[in-house]
Length: 320
Ligand SMILES: [Zn+2]
Ligand SMILES: [Zn+2]
Image (cartoon, rainbow, N blue to C red; front, side, top):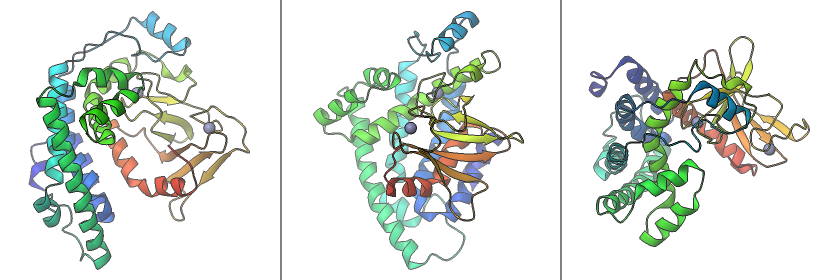
């Protein structure tokens, strides 16, 4: 793929991993194409983020009191740059869903193997959904450009886990709520990742014993069983933070009764992936066995690679 030629080695590694995944799972064409196009934008944006630090004493006190480090702080988020990133992400969704693109697989992802009829059907179905999403992304982008949709309150609401404002705003403006939420969250990631990286090696996150992220307060995206010792860590999909958490404890309701916690695996991948389910709160978490902590840019790739586990969990009545 020629577009990888000018990218840094880390981005290229992620894009190669995505190409490999696309060959294995054609049904993931749309999210893979989105992430391949979005990743260089996110990395570029992260490089330009204004740093944020807390006095170590304050950081320690916040963690000891159970308050995520970034919560309640006056953060140096650059609204113009973040809005610009948001618009570019909208355009990526528009581009990925353009009919010519999806029908010809214009992202160059599927050169391997002969497509069978089931795959073709799946791709046609994906094309249709992608086209709908592209139209919805265009509406959202124009609403921002025409100053009908204001992102600052949306970002502030997301920062404290308040989704009501998004629902209300999208109802009023007839926009797609789920897509707006995803794009607004994604546009915040470069800043959150830069700030989380700034705490690394300075603030010890391992004393934190909660399921939500100690840096930005988001729910854990997945669990990792790391290294030879098999220590269990939780990972944040927003800022990339990594903190230890007991194996036999639900990351959502902190329930510790082993009888309500279950593990599900798929034959052939027991060594790598599993699901931890909790019958007390009916939530689940995907568990990945890794030698080293997964680099933050690869977390969404692990998430995509294990989409079948989300389906299994949903079939059994567990939610994320
Ligand atoms: Zn976080
Ligand atoms: Zn639970």
